[in-house]
Image (cartoon, rainbow, N blue to C red):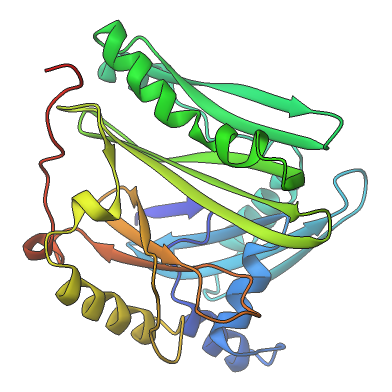
Length: 293
């Protein structure tokens, strides 16, 4: 029995979450509303057995001394109930909300590591955590990729229109071919309008060290958009697909495409995970030459 515990909301079948809550007689809503609740919680926990969702929960907290854990168990196993409860409580700490750690074993295998840097502007109440690469082969290539990883500062830390910004990051894929980092947070635009932040930086660590984005990754935009729309509807994320700018990040053997709906009232990004095997005919793995070559 292969048990996998995840603390992020990507790839979750929100239709299953909604139907399960309805089955057990708990409060239930539309799938997209459950997704918003989990994504805005202090911590969310999902347990999978052999890639099948069998348990999930979320916790809210004031980050000081009060927390509440909400649990749903889809499997009558006492040990699983206790494990999920313990994980949920343990996760209700600010330390857990920090960056996903990279093990020494993995660092030694890859030959590089990512360490956390912090940008703070107390006058504008801005705090941004971002990664810096160390130990990569070739100092020039490493510097080039670190410039890419620090672009989040230019966007939100050095723009006079933004204030009260808090951003953390998660490493969603890190191997010899691709390094993918996802930035999430919130901020104020022009001192009044709150907005959600979801940005990603994907790097071609295997060959060119160049950035990987929707534009240079997708070879057939029209067909891939159709597939993204179909998957978004199937997964209960939207009733119909409508998007202009689409971005992506990598998570294991999956590409997660995300966008903000074309609705002035929308404040939650739609994230659509699709297996790389499924989109193989629509994508490209050549991201250009190394800088300076």
